Image (cartoon, rainbow over all chains, first blue to last red):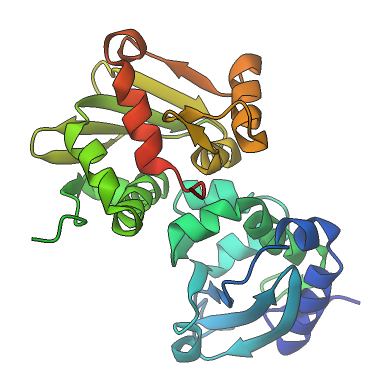
Length: 139
Length: 147
């Protein structure tokens, strides 16, 4: 069964996928810097507004994964944002998240030295999304 | 005067690509957290090209008397060229340093040195010989390794 991206069900499965990813668990064992928000840009008409996925992360574990409003998401200390098409590429393994950041296709906000120290964890965090059976509204 | 505010100018096109802002944000935030590194920024002179090979993105960083200017692509004849894939580029900034260069006695430093040896990370340019401190200052400015 596939889950529609970015729905509440999809986000719940994404949280499970993060916790099931041993590479993430190992790479993020020292992560105590709080929430990472993933922002998916609006893609009208099916996604009329920006959507934000709130990931409460601590020491290699995702304690909570939920959809929040963009205003709530903006409070996260770290934020990775991109438009819907880019996230679709990431989930489809067509775009490596680190490469996407270098190309400006994904934007990173927050204390850069902290996230660069945890770059493998950041990569695995985003790569965990590729493990969720996903259905896209434009396919 | 805020000594941690670095005089950095990015070409408009560079602002949209990720590599240039990422490198300059890293320098800026590093200096905010380690104000003593401002001296390394002030003493850096010359041009450095950084290329993320897999992302096919390159920037030229020109360190002048009045600050750092960042241009897209390879401009002029750089003193120093650093090229590797995106992940290795970030790993380079995470490497533990000894005397301003990757520490061979630390796993993160050894990883970088191995990539240099295998050619996965390329360092070249006349600056390596003529301006040896340039690389040391640059790595200190970009380093996020814990002290």
